[in-house]
Length: 234
Image (cartoon, rainbow, N blue to C red):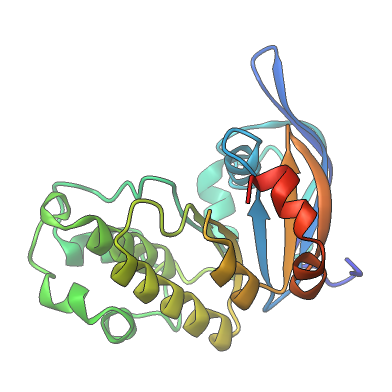
């Protein structure tokens, strides 16, 4: 896919943890309004890509551009302010703040308001006075998504979107992501549940040992089950 109007573009990105190189020449794009996945086994570099995009790890080589601007080397808070929202693996809600305080703590002006978050996740309205530490895992994930949306991002990244959640709650999260896609928000999604990813996403990048080893749309991935077998153990 052409990158001439890409919202996010990584070209030849390399990242290391100290002396240990973790990413090797990662190139990928996300277009406006597009849903893209990073898939692969645990420990293959998916979360490292996310951390590099968000400025939580510094790239050692390559180019990262977001909305036409180079972001490599910029502090993570400036990358967030540029319009990248993150729902991190493990949720990381503020445990000693209420649901409402979590939502407004890092909010920025825009179409995503408290009222709109409550419409998306009515449970957060019901629990708005509860502390983050008193929520169930599913409620914490809803809160983490709501908190990221309240920054009014142009791109939302979800690392392990439904990990550890009960099937009913997973269904609610997938329904939420479908609504976000319909609203035109660009998404990067990491998750182990391949069936809903194939349904929701436009394109996929398969990551193996810090490399992109395959990329394509859902139709192509369905037609090549050996990709999921070889690189995801499915």
